[in-house]
Length: 332
Image 1 (cartoon, rainbow, N blue to C red):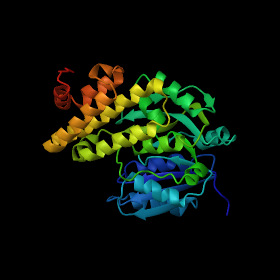
Image 2 (cartoon, rainbow, N blue to C red):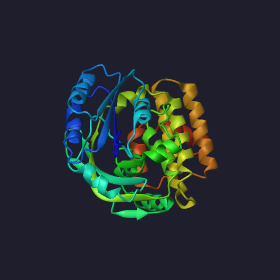
Image 3 (cartoon, rainbow, N blue to C red):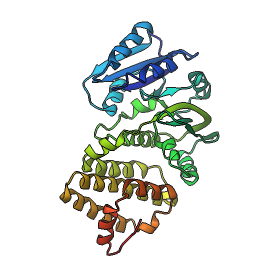
Image 4 (cartoon, helix red, strand yellow):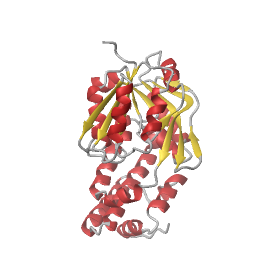
């Protein structure tokens, strides 16, 4: 049986309105040496029926139906069945540009284990914003991360290094090191996976094409309220752990700032859910880690981090508590 060049993995959940556009963008590609693995993650709508309809028409589509376990579980299930040389991850409400696979085939002909490409971000049904970097082929991935962190100047740049959907991953590396998505994470699971993958490769290629169209959802506020504070704490710890293998000392402050920012999400979630004991525990941990990292609030010197703090924590509650623990006030 011929091994496909690409394994395209799509977790599917409650996307009956968007799924056809996503799938059409793939099956209409001029390059067809790929397998498409659709994992229905317990969708309550007609998403599974749509997947099965496409699978009946195209022999290179595999449909897996599982109980709801989240996107990490769905992607892991697909990875267990994948056989391609390279792995691509696509979200079921997004879509790719024409000739994407053909161009990625050409760019990966030198067997580079990791290829980054740009993407376009759409807010609702509105305008697109493009996130793209210039061409670069490096055999020192730490050097690349150094350059990337020093050139980030807006929120969209955060996606370019952690986002799985704008990357081509060598499946050999994934299987050789038994890499899978952390099912305990429901946010930033893609960034942790990418960091773990990058720790096992030296070579990376960045190509100046925007192949991926990312639909930005505004429905995250409900899940933010429902998510447990401990989930944000685990995410913060995991990101700091995986990033530490990639980032040199010159840019550690950036990661420390992000760590405190993510802990702050947990503090805010605890307050919104009325879990005062948990809010106090996380606030004390946050203050302690800031002292250990020799950070104060003046250290948040990157504009987009200040914007995040103003946006996420407009009430200033967690900042007030931590400032009390620091015996100082900080006004946002």
